[in-house]
Length: 276
View (cartoon, rainbow, N blue to C red):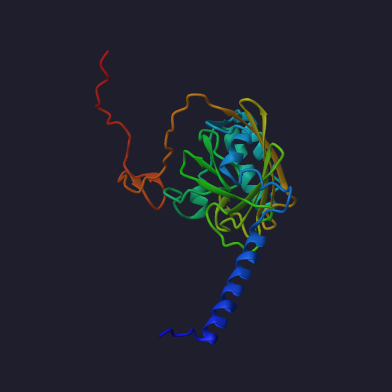
């Protein structure tokens, strides 16, 4: 005896199939690239070889004199300008003021932070390209994750030690916008970054081994006008990674509250002269 199917079940199945088919078509339409429009540079593995060659380690090509001159160009508000003046005067006299003491706490063993400049005078940086992201690392432990997008970062991004960075390629130049800086991060001595800091960077290869980073920072609580600077980095062929560490929490000879040597290092008066 043959049992006929319930016509109501057949109708329900047909409706469900139509709904699922419509949702599938809608999803495909939303995710499909418009005809003739290629994905953004750097979003796929296939596009990575066409990007500029940022491989290897890079060092900031600057002399001590150029570094100090650059500090003198920062458009700081009066309080910060006074602190900077003491630093520059001390440098000319061969003595750098203890800025950590001015903050009233030790500056040792703080977290790795990005304060607007990649690497430093003695710290090299490295770039890693992966689909949808550019990562910048340095020998001090800073890791910047730059997400590729055609939209700028959200102005209300949470604060962090490296900020929130979003970038895109304009031809051969990587343009990066960063917000969400740690407002309590040290800018100079007792002067903190403050809130609503924004940074725009443009990374451009000027030659096979020359990388230019032009930046513009706005920091309304400490700067009178936006601070613009252009830094030149050079590729360091054959460089071997060297971790830069200033942490002394486990060194009993250092006072963790002041960062100063706690033992008397004065040689005894009856110490015999070294041999030879």
